[in-house]
Image (cartoon, rainbow, N blue to C red; front, side, top):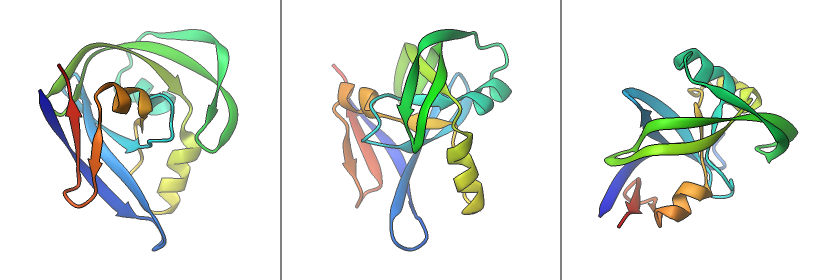
Length: 142
């Protein structure tokens, strides 16, 4: 099967672009930064706790790196009903990190905050093709 995920390609200070998309967790829309260099898809601790107060978070023993910050402690969570367009994942184990530094940057640029980062784990798993001309990600699933 082939699934299409619309993209929002936003100019950042006139000399580059950031790429965003929307996913759904249950019935709530989540805004994610698309980052092909991120090894995993992660979600922001503060925004997830606000929007899903009943989500059970588990402590993890290792630190996570990347996203412009030094190693930061993270949590993990089991997401049920995560949707990438019409592609539905009944279960997805994810990392929950403090992305406040990322959202602070977007606020300063007068851009909407993000709920997380769509990383290479899901992009690779579903053989993603990013089409800048059409502003779409094509995902494939058996």
